[in-house]
Length: 364
Image (cartoon, rainbow, N blue to C red):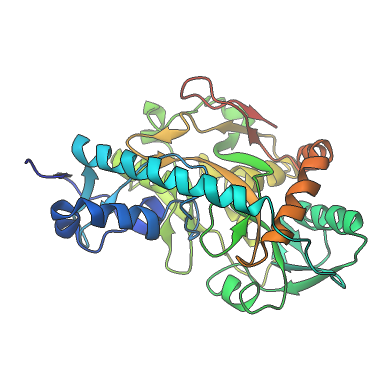
């Protein structure tokens, strides 16, 4: 049998496997034991625009990039993809059974308040003044439940879930990736995309990382995490050899100042960079408040081949044992679908609907 892995000839610059795919501590073992690969798929999945992981039962785009060491990266051969798809089919059956059992979850116990885990300085999502769309959504849900909202404030960075949801100081996080491994997630209430941001008077009309104009422009990308892990756009640019003309802007920024994630949009406004590639909800909100007219264009296609996504579903997250509460939130989200869409419109959040082929159709 031929090797299960094809070795890449060039490493991806500063790649962080936990951002891009399943992290394999031993590709050699996965090569010899396909069952080990299935276990990795089930237990070690990592796929997202943040440090958030994935759980096996949520909708996803199937894709894998393995890290076999500091500078060696792997992609599966057709045989391994066959094994993967078999695993996905088996997992889908198990997930269907899990969903069926969750439909019969008991009524959640009475609550004195809707206790929300939230970041005090993270517009457009949330802040202590309750100006974010997640704050407004929390109020909407609390009203339906006949409760008041109580917040546990914690900066949304390393340790956020450990010190809030898992510590039991609050009961729900309003915005998490739809397949977040550290929480039980609701059905997604919106899907958004990374976008190219530029001054409107520049007329770049860039929508793809393959646009040759990018090589001659000053580019900005968002960096995720305390360790400056690369976001999907950073990986897409490095794969195309665009490194020297790229500047990173941490999502955390200077937390002593208001709205630290907005640095990359401010840089476009100041003309420090020509094009920023940023997460859509944040970019859409701050572009609306820019003193300079800005143009936002969704990244196309949705997935940079082989398996690097730019579009993500966002849900609410509760503790894994709170299945009844999750089901209750699902019902409320469904009943307020139109209200939620209007709220997201008000905040300039770009949403992605059904794709035509591999293109992104975004609503602003």
